[in-house]
Length: 456
Image 1 (cartoon, rainbow, N blue to C red):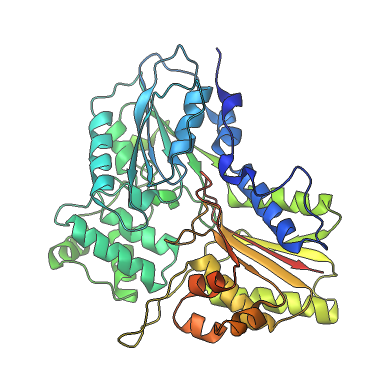
Image 2 (image 1 turned 60 degrees about the horizontal axis):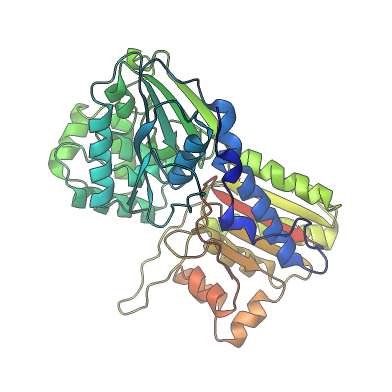
């Protein structure tokens, strides 16, 4: 059973590090960048998917899915699946997230592109087509569902009574509200015809194997991409409470449907999930552990705080700064030199601005760096990198940003004040002005936030 597995490469991150990590004292930025590259490489689909593929079935094998890593996952399946076994399907990914196809690797799975984080018509059309593809499957058929972060927006199919414009407005409001990912996806599941286990129901009676890359705190498959093929324990009442908590408006007819429980999702006791399996093929903790191993190999102590950190990005940055400053000034809670690692999914609440004020740019990694830099107060011997492992911080073209002991001074020399940047949620503008954005391009995976603080 020949395969093309060895021909797949990691072009998106190959330039980020040499075979040997840069010296952390002579090149702190390069060292931090090498840790990010190690974390990203640990989550590449080719390396993680092969141990979880089932054997080909008697019937058809259909591959479906959605997420920022969708195209890379599809290529990995094509490379690892026996060439003489039938394979077809459709996977949707974010615009610009299709890796270069290795020479000699035949394309058997169609890739569609759509918008993220706010859905568009292309994502809705792809979702409709996926539902059509799974119609009429038999018990001898196999569905491989490839799920990764971003799938909620990419696989958008509004519930009856909702338009695409309604979904776009609700999604944008959720993103700007400060709601965490579990809350956002609870709402998304109940306002969809494909999420929250509904896609699994549409696949019956075929066997469904879901292969997922986690980008959520706790690695709950029901939250990743709003769990299209796994049961949903949340309720319409939960979704209503979240909408009320964050003051998010929905059409009255849809509100009434939620109140009557008419938009309920398939629950864990639903027989449609009998015999179906879910495999987590990559997680944030695994990537943090890989980076921690690289730190130890460089002769440094390492402290992994958690892969489940949530909260306002700027506040999480301030907590990391407090730990780093205490380590430098008091030798506690850690001895230096060391590296502090963390992951999770923080949030950014967009601040209202006076009329005429230019809109800020940036994502949660950049906002973390703003909060960190402000709280570090130019502390000597502390360097940091925060970046999204998918290579895109929010909707910008950067993965994240660096913080150095002279960040504040360099920014002020070009007329940038960190407090002003925080007020306007303008991390991109702030770090771009001093050349401290990290730009990698899409990495073809997604295990959420990566943060590394180096204390010398």
